[in-house]
Image (cartoon, rainbow, N blue to C red; front, side):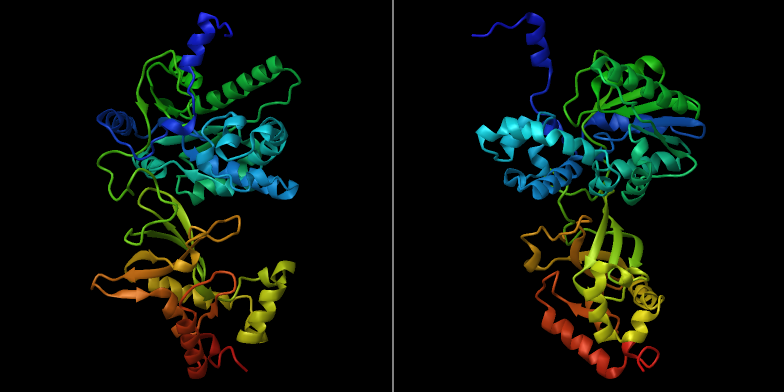
Length: 448
């Protein structure tokens, strides 16, 4: 048996065996309510609340999966083709590879190979599109912001500022004059000691910037040693430790939470975890409508979700038709809609306007098509849009079948090539009837 010092044994016992295993995003408790409500009571004009980003507000596991699966596809590393977020339960890649089913003889080699592509991809701007919010985080921050508090987002993301800003906005987090990004970059260093010193200096710069924003009354952090440091720096502040990725050991005592939900929060999904897509009976809040076949909506737990209407193919925004990868779609649209419409840079606006009018008539809900069950009702692009039929329930109790109405009004083609669905024959009949009647894009305005 190998000997182990008492100190080493103590550290082994204190260290978490699996990092994300204790992350319970939908759990609630009186203690969690007390911590979250206590910070809300402290919030107000001139008061600052600090938030760490990764693993505190943001679940980065989908980003890591996307980075590693893309690398695996390029390099032909078949062992990672099936990697999923739930496989990442620690910062030990050998454990992750075991959970992903990699053969034991290959684990050590793969763990060594993936470190560089993981680091390059994880810290890239483009990969942030895969980030998801911790359950309830964005709604809680909006409540703080509404009380007049200044929010400070702190992280080592200076090179990712544009992507971070875009990601936070898409996920429903406040941004603006009272919601500041405080990002710094750790300087390159050759030795571990120098890297540690550079990281400490970068952190100090960030915290000094936060201190200049106002009176720091609270902070949220997932790393135990950072929790201790924040409590020492601002002894009068409430520093809340979010137990998410296993960095749980702290020397100081203070409030600990497992998530952002309070028992008063309503309409959270069950059981046990946020679903990959909203249930059909979940009402969604429309955030924006980018075009005639895409909607961005917010679920009750705070996540912003991009919806791609199944079976719908409206004209593209200018200048998308000129992209090399859009040549096939452009030819198809010219054949169906006509060259005049495709050449008009504002043609797409009519379909969007009609869609906005439909969505304004009631509450938005989703329905799914069995054809997309294997993909989890998500498309295969990096955006991982949710594929759905949109249903608007009016105050009078009626239901508007949005996808069908777009077909009936003549603002779309039936589209089943990329996103299969079982209503193809129905949608084609509606489109053909609109063409015959000269409705929408087949009216005299657009057709010669």
